[in-house]
Image 1 (cartoon, rainbow, N blue to C red):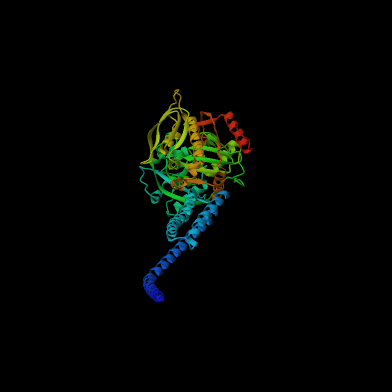
Image 2: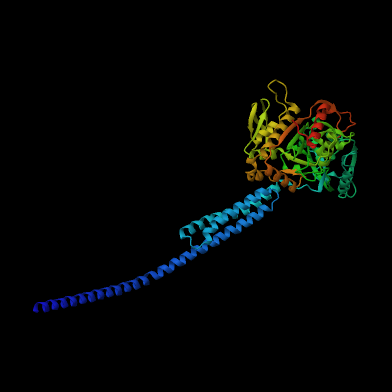
Amino acid sequence: MEKNEGNNVSNVQFSVDDDIKAEIFQQEIDVKKTDDKGEEKKNAKKEGPNMERKKIIRWIIYGVSIVVMLGVMFHSKRLYDLISSYIFLPDKYIQYLGFGLLGINLFFAIFAFLPNVNNLNKILQSILCIVLAYALAMANIMVPNYKGQWERVFVEVPTEGDLMINVYVLNSSEVVDINGLQGKVIGIQSQLDVEYQDYALKVINREFEGNPVESKAYEDIYSIVEALYAGEIDAIMLNESYADIVAGNDDFLTFKEDTRVVYTCVQKISLEYNSENVGDITTEPFIMLIGGSDDRNFNNLFVTTGAGRTDVNMLLVANPITKQVLVVTIPRDSYVALWGDINCMDKLTHATVYSISCWQQTINWLFDVKTNYFFRVNFLSIVKIIDAMGGLKIDNPYEFETHACLNMENYTEGGYAHFPEGEIVLTGAQTVGYVRERYGSKPDGTGIGDFGRNEHQAIVVAALIRQITSVSTITNIGPLLKAIEGTFFTDITIDEIYALAQMQLDDMATWKVIQHKLTGYSAGKPSYAMGKNSGRVYSMVILNEQSLEQAKNLIKKILNSEVIE
């Protein structure tokens, strides 16, 4: 009994102790929770500003990312609109450009506009977009510059020009200006430029009150220059363009050095051309008359009243459907009818001395065609083109050497070059020597002559066509455009040039170049310019009728879209 009571007391004691321990443990837990909450409040107070800064930084990164992306989209749209407005690019390239720009913009827009992209990716996207936006902005600047350079390559054909009538005296003359002409005898021509000379005489005599100049008429240029040297007259009145014809005569090679100009009468005249442009240059065959001048002055190319002598004459017949080009080279001294008038027989090189129109009409008569365009270039233009392309690759038919290369330091000839047989690469200066050489010899001992020179010119033109239309040149057009700015004179319009460029970019076709050179023989014939009734004869090239007929047949085949094998 007592024993049981003891056990019960002991059990009660244990129960009380457990309750106390449990209560103490719960108090400890409550204290710990209280401490934890306090620590959390302290940590929250510390972390609050950091979280706020992180949010601000994230929004800044997000904002910058969007702004930069908008810049990329703006310059992309601007570039697309700019390039698509240029008619020289085919539609497929415009589409490629559009899809490419759209893909790039979509890719970067994902990183820019989605808010859950981490900061590092957004920063990387922003940097790349800044670079891309800069590149697009530069493209928007450079593309119009290239377009402007391309358009400035060709000089617009004028409708009005200056005709200059000069008064020449010998260097030994006491006459130094217009005042010194009073009472003097001036030689004039009775056959050429009569109305322009009469006007110039009236202008001169207005300067004098009582003692006007006296004029003496001569039938031809040779006679008037001969009279000046003989002292029969004090001065001569001469169209400035004719000075080249005089200086080209063996009897007056130093005319320009022996004389000086004391007065010039400039008269405005209307200019006419005989081109018959085609309706669509990309679908219709066309004929282009190409002239090369030995003059180093680009400005002399653009004088249409009297453009100086033309040393290289070629007829280019192109068919854009069959992708064939016929290049017919014509000897510069060919005996032809100027203006197509058989009463005005002279050297072909003299045609442009009178006018571009005279040159066109002469060629039309010779081949019984209608030229659609003309194109004039001088040797410096060729030098610039070839050097800008890094050289010209040709297939030289035989070995020869020359001293007619251009010295680029002072633009004089005399540079030496050796051309081995086979495939060679010419510099611009070497090309001048290659197309000008006629006094050298071939390996078999025969002379190169005018016909060999014509062959060299055709080889160079064919090589230029192939190289200029190649992918490597078209895709690196910038340096070429910069080099040849303002060096060509043609009546082909810029829209027609763009159309040809678009066609070539669209199909990247390889053109077949057919070459034909007119042949003939040398003979003494009278010159219309120097006086056809003077009894004097000059060296001319009488064209071979068979060679001329072959050229006419080839021209017809190209125009009729026949494939020439």
